[in-house]
Amino acid sequence: MASPDTDTPRVRRLDPDQHEALLEAAANEFAAHGFDGASVKAIADAAGMTKPRIFYYFDGKEDLYSEVMSRLLGELLAPAGDLPPPEDAEAYWSGLAEALERMARQAETNARGIALAQSLYRRGGDAPSYVRLLTRVSGLVTAWLERGRRLGAVRTDLPVELLCNLTIGALVQVDRAFVESATWSRDARSGAAHAEMDGLIDGLVRIARDALRQSVPATLDVEMNYAGDTTPTTVDAYVQVGDVETVPVVLRDGRQSEPAPALQTHAFQLIEAPVRFEADLTDDRARQAYPAIEQRLMELTGARKAMVFDHTVRRTAASPDGRQPIHLVHADYAKGAGERRLRELLPEDEAQSWIANGFLIVNLWQSIDGVVHSSPLAFADRRTVSDGDFLPVTVEYGERTGQIGYYRHNPEHDWYWYSFLRCDEALLFKTYEPAAPGRHWSCPHSAFSAPIEPPEAGGARSSVEFRIALALGGEA
Image (tube, rainbow, N blue to C red; front, top):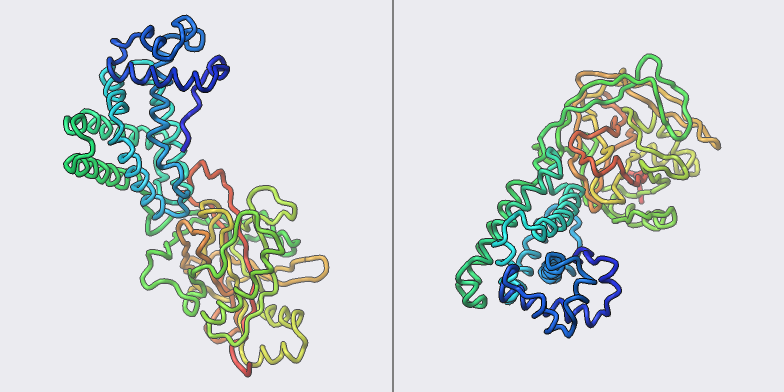
């Protein structure tokens, strides 16, 4: 992590070697004598400059001292700068421990840095240099917290500003305990000093986890859009529908449910993503993943054959094809439409073989740009759905006409979602299964607005979904 840029325009015109010599001389003088006792003339002499020239580049002694402290902050942060950015909540917290450990090892051998920090704290919290440094630290901590919220690691029920103040308060107390310790001033490399610092680090990580970690409720109270009396039953391929009935529902977190929802029972399941994608996913890259997806789903379901026949990338941000998340409870196929779709995809004799021996159509859905906060998917347990809840809908795709459907509200519907879905995870759900007595043929699903979404996520979500036909029986 780089230190904040605090140079004034005049300082940027100073020769880099002379700038470095000046900061070295100033750091030595301030460390030896503190702010009040330090002599600007002594600094100038050591740097080979004149006092008036120093004051040409800096707005007084306080300004010079402030840059020395900013430079010290950069030295402290440097060892953590090459840590890989965390990709999930677990890596976020382990990365914090590793970063603090590296910074501690850097600090414990820096006697001059300890002396400078001691001088900073002894001046008090009203000193301009202290306030300026704390402002810079606040920016770094805020960025760190916002990244944690995007990963689902840091709580979203309190403002970032409050979390930042809590974090900085803990950091300052631990840092003061470190720099004011007599053990450190004597010998930072001693075994006792290492143990002391390790204890401080462990304590700080525990404080951070306890105070900042996201707590996901087992249930969420949300609003779901169902079909109403005036909901259109003919739409285009983008399926952006108004005139809906908004109904409050309770969602269960599938991660915390026992037993976990499964494809065979609930008609949806959380799985490890067969292929992981990046935010700049193209159609060609998505098609390249078809074989790996087919192989994984055959292994997972026992199907004798799998055929990925389509995919869609959806983005909440403006996109060329306008494929936005669908905030309406729907099914991808009407009753009987799965067989019709299969006949469009396969030669008639092969399609008839699939139909005769059993088949499924499933959807594999996953994020392509970080943890899902905005417009996550919710699923209704298929066992709580009645055929009478279904409303047939015609979709005009241009080259063909499809049959999907919406759902009317039924209080018996039992709803689930998965908190903070990661890019290495995927949701697999049945979009069509031939009708059988007492079993609905599809899994109702919808995007929804999550109350635990952090404001800085900005409502952004990018995802990809693959549609796959699975042949369940017959000869290979």
